[in-house]
Amino acid sequence: MILDKLWFYCVAFILIILGRYFLIAGGTYLLFYSVLGKFFANQRLRRQTPKWESIQKDIKLSLISTVVFALCAALIMSEYDLGLTLLYSDFNKYGLWYLGVSFLGVLILQDAYFYFIHRLFHNSLFFKWLHQGHHCSREPTPWTSFAFDPPEAIAQTFFFLVIVFIMPLHFITVIAALITMTIWAVFTHLGFEIFPASFPRHWLGKWLIGPTHHSIHHRKYTVHYGLYFTWWDKLLNTHDPNYDHWD
Image (tube, rainbow, N blue to C red):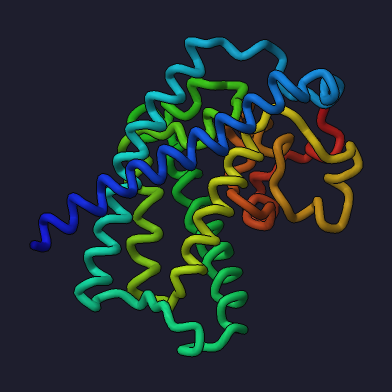
C-alpha cells in the first residue's frame, strides 16, 4: 500500500512539475524570444542567439531533475500520510499571520542554503561532477532555470526534505514557495533585463537578484551565488564590485 502510494505520488508530481516547467519556462522563452524580443532588444543580456543544441541539453537535464524533484515530493507526501512531517492544512492551526511569516522564513532559509551549496559547487573539486551541466549554457535562457546535474538536483531538493520536518508549514506556504522558486529561476535566467538600468542602485534593487545579476554569474563563475537576495554575496565578498555599472 505504501509503495503503491509512493509510485502514485511520483507519477503525479512528474506530470505536475513537467507541466510547470514547460508552461513557465517554455512560455517565457516563447514570449521574450519571439513575441516581445524586438521590444526588449536594447535590454538583451545575451551576446549570441541561443543555439538549439544548448537548449536541448538544458531540457534533457531538466527532465532528469524533474524525476528527482518528483521523487522528493512523493517522499514528503508519503511521510505526511504517516504523520511524520510538520505540514498542516488547517488555516486556524497557527493563524493566517503565520502563513506570511513562514513563507518569508522559507525564502530566507532557502536563499542561505542555496548560497552556500552553490558556492561549494563552484569549488574545483566538485564543479565537474555537481554543477557543470547547468553552466553548459554560459549565457542562459529560461530553459536553463532547472537544468541541473542529478547530484545537484538532489542537493536542491534536500532543503525541502528537511524543512518540512523542522518548521510547521501549511501546504499553501509550500506551494507558494515552490512557485516563487520556479518563477524566480526563470526570471533570473531570462536573458533580458526588464528593469531600468538604475534598478541596481534602487533601494529595493540593491537587495534582489535579477537577470543581470545572475547573467554575470554565468559569465564570471566567481561571483553572485545567491538565489533571491544579494546580502550573502555582499557580506562574504562575492558580489561583483562593478555590478551597479555592468553593461
